[in-house]
Length: 279
Image (cartoon, rainbow, N blue to C red; front, side):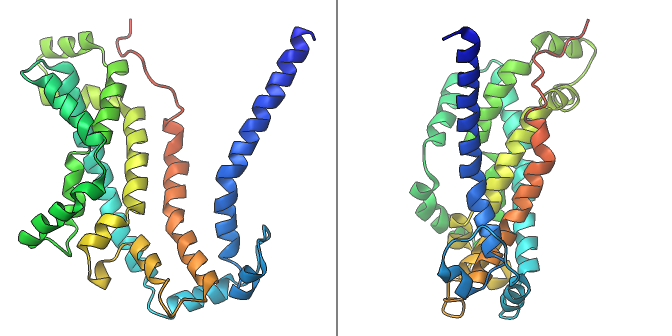
């Protein structure tokens, strides 16, 4: 078998695997959107990849029984946007300090962050809930947003990313020019780390938007429910057989995620700057 034939076969194999992976990723989302347009009877008949014409009835059924979709969107947006901004900013700042400055116990501090990455949220949720209850912060978004200041996974990602893009000669040059440390971070480091910041932002937004466990533990007032919590209420007796409405609620909950990823995903593949000093 010639080299050209082997190359062609390998290319066909690679593309076949990629197409299969694409189908595995896209098919569940497509089926969710299709089921949002079908009636309960159609859904019970079996799987279909062709949209139906029952979306309007599903929407009327969804909104006519107390499902305040706009309130859920607003609550989830406030939480997700706040968490994203705080996570990206403070994670980059922490990672920048760990990478650039030398101080006592730096390695121990970073090692402690790595340990926290491996600790699941469920382990500490009981103590966290009791602490928030003692501070009378339940039914509030504060305990959902403020912990984003210390996001171990984001700090780890930011540290690894900054190691590849930071040029310390540029920092020294800025110090010689009289820039303060906070100015160097805002005017030099943040623009350089833009691709990594957007990547972190996408992950933080998706995680905050889909987060159900922590809000479910801390929030009990219906008017403060996030969108995933509202979707969970569709499993009650009223909606027990209204599968079309349930699928429509789920489909609406993923629309912001798709929009955010579509807009900002280009920054992930736009290329990482490996140096900032130009001749």
